[in-house]
Length: 102
Image (cartoon, rainbow, N blue to C red):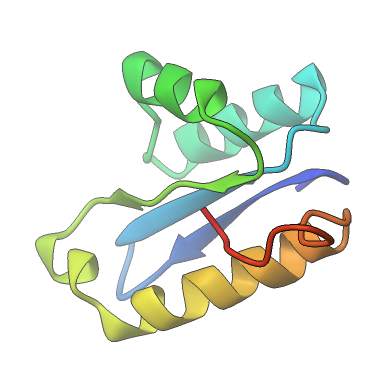
C-alpha cells in the first residue's frame, strides 16, 4: 500500500472479516489517505474516533478491526498477525531494543 504503512485484510468471505492497519511512525499523510481510501473502497471504513485512537497510539502499532464475531477468536489471525507485525516493523529497525509487538 505504501512504503512505511500497510493494512492486512483477513478474509473468510467477502467482504473482509477483519483488518489490521500497521503504522510504524514513519508514514506520511498520503499513505494514511491511501489506507483510508482502500478501506472505504472495500466497504470497511474506519470510524474517525477509532482511527484517531490508532494514530495516537505509540508506534509501532498493529490494530485489529473485527467485522465478524468469529474473527475475534480466529486462531489464524491470533497467530499470524503478531508474526506479520514483527516482520513488517523489523524492516524499519523497530525491534533493535524491544522484541515485543504492541
